[in-house]
Amino acid sequence: DELRATLALRPYAETLNDWRARYRGSYALLYGPFMLVGLAKQDEHTIMARAADVASWLKVTVCEPKNRGDAAASWAQLQLTATGRDGAAVRLRPLGAVVDERYTAYFRLD
Image (cartoon, rainbow, N blue to C red; front, side, top):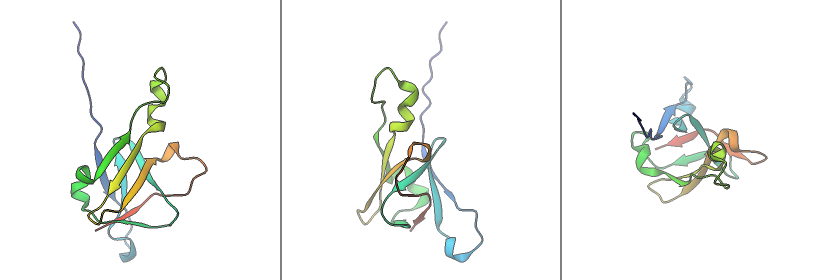
């Protein structure tokens, strides 16, 4: 007997655990077990989107290893794009895959 299962990763947003009013509406974006960071030149990002609808505005753009024989490294090539209602897009990568790049880990969601 053989059992095969496909377990899909899903995107979700977690609120920042901070009591200060300045950080209300700040979220971490995750894709399955991976915390995502935004690659950008500015320190803070606002994504014009609802946290509850994250699956509709966070999309996977790259999800396969560069070398087909290296499936274990596929998480490092993972790339996503978050596009809000205003059309602005933010490139996202797993935190562990970012090296020598400026990034932001938390996002304000509208």
